[in-house]
Amino acid sequence: MLILIGVTVYRLGVLNKTEEIYAGVSDDIDKTPSVIATATIGDSTLKIPSYDMFKPGNLWLIVSKKQPLEGEAGYKLIDIPVPHGDEGAPMKIAVDMSDELQQLVNAAEADEEPLMISSAYRSLAEQQAIYDEFVEENGVAIANQYVSPVGASEHHTGLSVDFSSESDECAEDSDSCSLSQSGAAWLADNAYKYGFIQRYPQGKQAITGVAFEPWHFRFVGKPMALAMNDTGLTFDEVVEQIAPGYTKTK
Ligand SMILES: [Zn+2]
Image (cartoon, rainbow, N blue to C red; front, top):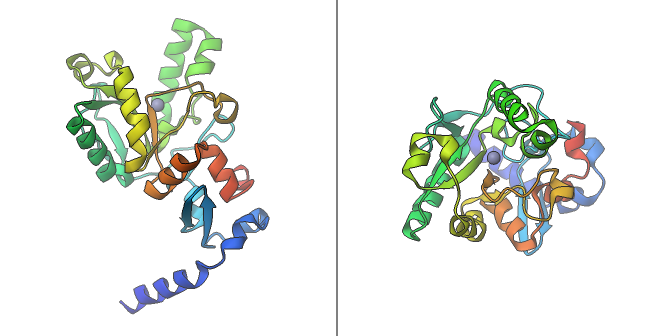
């Protein structure tokens, strides 16, 4: 108990270092990975518990073509606790978002927009298989536009899900899942309330590197999701604002 109190006091003490975020400290972050600060994003004040938040195994890791994973990301995975498509093996998500995903799906159901998950965690080997199959069917150019190379998919974290509208076809085969326009609209309006953000919004491909995916949502936690909803910024832009250049130095 004494140790816990000590940690709390320490955290309160360093929460005041707000300026450090904007003070060009990126080069120092690796040396002092436990700096705690706050960032103002739109009307939201975002607490930065630790710059470890941007590392594999943590909530704000960026995974992209520019910043691919070199190995499995190390998130603790659990069997997905909401309705989902059948992809021939147990579907899994990172435990970090389990409660919020259930709340989101329950809320959609209550609003008569029932949802299922068509895709969640993917291992590096599974992503390789998806990419190879897509290349075979559609060619390399289209595959590179719509399928992430191995290591570059956020699905490797277990913090991303693809939503589908609820249907028997989806339940039987995840390849038959699809998201209705009304389902996409519901998610665009409501997902942030549960800590999920649209990772590849319309018109932001130049920033995200990925074409518009109305079905793909990433869990970033409620404070970050609120901040992003306030500003309309992409995840890439907010992370760059919080920790300039940091993600490129990992
Ligand atoms: Zn996806």
